[in-house]
Every structure is written in structure tokens, then in C-alpha cells.
Image (cartoon, rainbow, N blue to C red):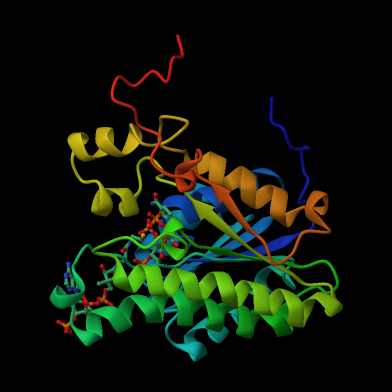
Length: 266
Ligand code: NAP
Ligand code: COA
């Protein structure tokens, strides 16, 4: 049984930057499944159109082409979303880029590109959407990552960008709280069947090694991140702002592997 009330988001509109694949598309489908109208935006227009069809077709979803690095591009996408479905109640900023490289193997442009998509993109999306929000009551969520808190080698760009996102969420929560806008983050752990994990743990061996360190001993699912987004976007989280919600099977607690793998558990 679905833990959330059917049609929880009836009459609500969501805009999801980076919602054309992976985790963010999973969030889009979860919100639409609970009654929201959803606009998803990514650079590739064919991917955006296909995502909208997958979410439920033109009655419930709109696929838009936008590059979050370009403020005007974000504004244009927001204008189209609002023209189609009305003012926004839920905004998710989830567009991101990642590759594995040491700092010395990363050009200045490589570093800047990821910071530009993740951090500057989140500022652009949140800054530009404010004028279109149903206030009070709107919910903004940034999709961040454990790299924001725990430094990881070969991830200098992502660590810097995601740390910036976490703090940006906290500042905006303070500035926009008085107008009834909540700003939070979701920090997923390793999520199955995603581009992110294809890049970070590309072999079964790498996946097994990673899983052995996670307290809950498995990757998460897109639906599990979707459920966290549903909670934070719903009235159940009406007094929650400026928080980063870890949905990671305990990954950020540290390495939970043991020599024999049992910890004395049967
Ligand atoms: P993904 O499938 O590659 O999703 C990235 C999305 O962002 C796509 O829709 C992509 O579409 C869009 N995008 C990329 N650059 C963009 C730009 N400049 N402007 C607009 N859209 C852009 O990745 P994912 O693995 O599901 O990750 C989704 C989010 O979860 C990211 O924020 C990531 O950091 C976070 N996360 C993922 C994991 C994981 O296990 N995968 C763990 C922790 C955090 P286009 O390519 O068409 O632009
Ligand atoms: N190692 C080192 N540098 C790399 C690299 C790698 N594996 N991949 C890209 N770069 C560098 C490029 O060389 C370039 O720098 P340069 O101009 O000095 O040579 C810079 O990064 C930008 O690359 P480019 O391909 O022009 O950027 P883009 O805007 O087309 O794509 C990326 C952005 C690189 C982040 C691309 O991987 C992407 O689009 N990712 C989106 C999907 C994704 O990453 N999903 C996972 C999310 S967690």
C-alpha cells in the first residue's frame, strides 16, 4: 500500500530541473502519481519529451529544454511551465554533472563545468522560480550528495559544488522562510540504475565493495528518493526548512563493513 494519501498533490504544480532521467525523473513520476502536474527540464529536448511521455503524457507532464547554467534559459523554461500548469508549489533542483578525476587531471574548465551545473544551476533555478511560487506554502528541494559533507578523492568538483548547495539551501531557508517558502535538500546514497552510479561504481566488483560498507547493505531505489521528496513537499513537513535529509541507508555514518560481515548478527 502506498504510504501517502492518494491525490496528495491534486491541484499542485511541480518544476523539476534535471527531471528528464534518473533519480529526478523518479521524483517526477512519484509526484505525478500523487496528482501533481509536472514540468521536467534538461538540455536534451528529445530526452525531455520522452520523460514527459513516461511520466503520464500531456495532461500531467511537460518536457522542456533548458540549460541550468544559463539564467535566461531557466527563466524561459519556468515561463513555459507556469503558462501550461499555473504557479508553482514544488520546485526540485537536481541537474548535475559528474566524472571521476583527480584534481591534477581536471582542467579549470572541468572543475568549473560541474560547479556551474550543480551549484550555480541551483542558484539560478531557485532565484528564478521565486517569482512564480504559490506563497505561502511552496517547497524547494535541492538534490545534493554525501560528497557535500565527506570529502572524497577524485571528486573535488562535486564535493565543492554540493557543499555549496547545502549551505545555499540554509541561507535561502532563512531569507525566504518569512514568505512561507521552505528550502531543503535531499542527499541520496548510492541509488541503483542511475548514471551517477554507472560513473562512480562502474563494475559489479566496485558495487559489491561499496554495498559491503553501507549499514543497510544495499543501494537505494529511485522510489525511495521520491518518497523523501513527497514528504518534504507535503504538509507533513510544514515546519521543516533548512535541513538536508540523508536518504542513504546510513552511508554517511561511515564504513560499516566487517572482516566476517556479521557484527555478531545471525
Ligand atoms: P542523471 O540521470 O544523469 O540526471 C541528471 C539530469 O540533469 C538529467 O536530466 C540531465 O539531462 C540533467 N542535466 C545535466 N546537465 C544539465 C544542465 N546543464 N542543464 C539542465 N539539465 C542538466 O543523474 P542521476 O544519477 O539520476 O543523478 C541525479 C541527481 O542525484 C544529481 O543531482 C546527483 O548529483 C544526485 N545524486 C545521485 C546519486 C546516485 O546514486 N546516482 C547519489 C547522490 C546524489 P540532460 O543531460 O538532457 O541535460
Ligand atoms: N576527466 C577529466 N576532465 C573531464 C572529464 C573526465 N572524465 N570529462 C569531462 N571533462 C572536462 C572536459 O575535458 C572539459 O574540459 P576542457 O574544456 O578543459 O577539456 C570540461 O570537463 C567540460 O566538458 P564538456 O564535455 O565540454 O562539458 P559538457 O557541458 O558537455 O558536459 C559533463 C558536462 C562533463 C559533466 C558531462 O559528463 C555531462 O553532461 N554530465 C551529465 C550527466 C551526469 O554526469 N550524470 C551524473 C550525475 S551525478
